[in-house]
Length: 290
Length: 242
Image (cartoon, rainbow over all chains, first blue to last red; front, side, top):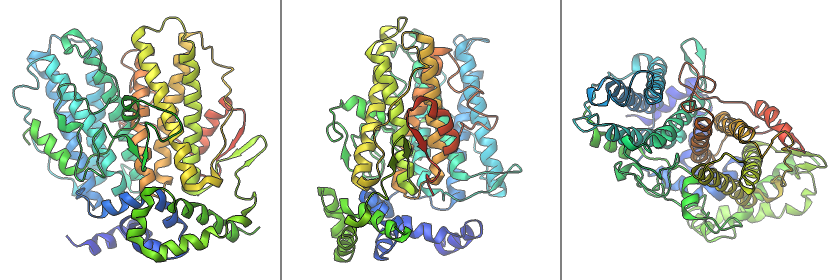
């Protein structure tokens, strides 16, 4: 992969990409140029993460790679809900007309819309669609299905968050006849996944759904509630992709450092954390074959 | 005072925090003496900035420009949400179950944490440009009525999500974008929960998610138009992100 070729390609759609990459990737050189307000603005909060980022394990750089990664996750989620809605062992819980089935159908509809949107954005660069095998456990009973669903949604939220910095903010491709800002679209998908996650989590409170009676719509600490612990753990490197029980934002310890005292539970829940693509892919492959 | 002078003092404000806390020391280890000297030189401009960069005049709060404008914008919205939920949990409307009270109390704390975080972070990054505490106007909210409380909460949460979604592309500093991303998904979780309390299954219905499966993204102007009735001061966000 030729970095300069990628930059040249990006410059065709985003003339300022070189500046932006300088800003993002090379804080040192940016700081070296005396008058750059942006670089100095970046310094107080960003400096630590900027250096880490340059050597990070978030291996996606080309925008199409980011989009194909998102497409893979959306295809996985769509396949998961589509198979669930057909699974014989779940039929008694996902009965026609029930609130539960309605919610899962709503989520499936969104995942399919995301697949279609990303496919349209990628055009001929879209990767081939794999088939997904979720094994015998995922759809064996309602509680198991919802545990998997929570894992996929919370992972999806972390995955999109982990890519936000890899999407140049002025990429405005035409998708399906409409010009869109790619970063904004990614954020608009990201918050929908978070809404899904919140709802799935509360569905798990029900007796037949696993009776997770104290689970919250948000992530408290790194509590996995029987989902794979890696979903809530640290990524690589942990400095850039901390576990969900992280208490430090922008170098500030939020339990004690912001003028009042807050509990670890509340602080950890108030911020979701990003996850790198390698860790996300490993999580996905730990629960599905594709 | 010319724009150039003001720019200089902006830079000085950003540079200043490089000196103090422990974290900044690692910066110097990497960036070396040149950047350190730069910061020193710029902070020398401090005294002549006067009130020009002070974004506040009586009755009007100017959020400012660039990334600081975006941070002030977020801080303003978090102030509003935090003040709202503080009032909600101070005297719960009848009809909220114990479980709902627990969740609303958690939301109140999340918003207070967001508010206090922004206050601390902006003060550290650009102390002269932080907006003051805003005066909320909740005269349209009936805090003793569950329906009124939830409807207002839904408005604020959906608005917050749409605001962060719309502001992402305005942010130049990737670290700030990262912070916004960490917060917006929590707001979305709140929004989904509140919506489900109003009517189960509406966590992501077609009033907020479109046919492409996308949540709302609103411009600063759209968000401030919606938020203004809840704030006594007049908010000027015309330069946010610019």
